[in-house]
Length: 430
Image (cartoon, rainbow, N blue to C red; front, top):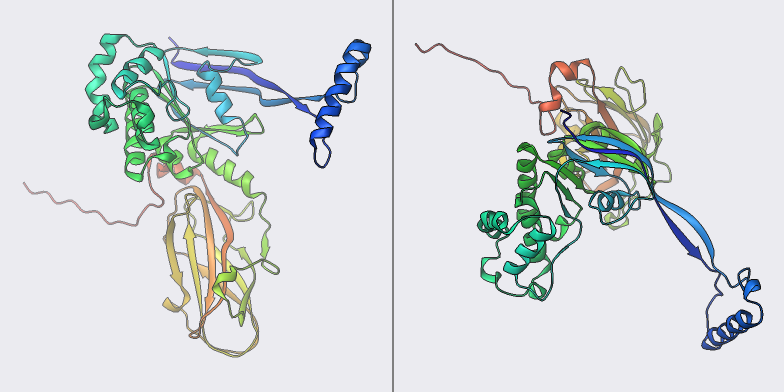
């Protein structure tokens, strides 16, 4: 028996978009005049009216085009892509809210979906009544809902307002109850769009834990989000949509890396900072400035990309405009969730003192960093005892890619950012 629960073949969704030429502005007299023209043409020449210049031009727009993939039972799939890539359209089709234009979908099991706040809720009904209503919409029997009722209410944290019409709920209360119903009822497939953004941080963490628990119970989870950290922590595989097409479908780290790589475009071997705008609010002195940067680590088949577990080595060129008694380089590393994971100051190892005007190269070599395969970002700063000379928040990005060593180290089962250097010992006590 196959463990494939969702099979999509050549799925497409086409919309017809109408365009009509408009003047710079439209006055009331123009509206009335056009109405008279249209009416007269219909009466005098209904066939000619079809070709009238007042008719709207139509264009075919594909929200999805020839998308194919297979999802196995228990998979937790992150769907990522830019706005308008087709993510929500895909979930609506899988939820049977929208009909596809063409293609084939095979779904084994019941589907629960949370695509927007309060989906399936009636505003005049109470929270209690909406639990039963929403459960019935999802195909659950009354007895089944009753078994889960207490868990749903406890998770949603709306006990005090259970008999209050949901139209009086805040958006946070709405989404807590809606998510709780979808997550607790006995369905095999859970589809979640990025509605959790309206909840507070504690509830978002609670939801992520619940979805992870649902996946470990053998249920399949589809999760649409722009939060790469949340996607990486929850999902085991990923689908990258680009302009309605399936660009990449693989393990989640590879999918995120492909998505971020596409978003940033190809990185040149040498990144030139001449002409790059600095944050104006910092009032930088610009007595010393960054000129360019490059990665000089070995085994780079592609610029700014090295295999695990190599350590990154960077070379920065700077120009000093006037005598500097003491200069300090600051470098910060960020992951794709924009979380700072490490920061370094050159003064920890190197004293750059009494620098004369001229151009200098600074090499920064990390040791025993053991970053897990993913994409990372650099922020650069130069400062003296007087103040900040230069600062570039988005200076560069680099990627640690999988390798043979990745399999040996089993990086695919490790969470976090890096593998720390640790010593172990064991003693026989008996």
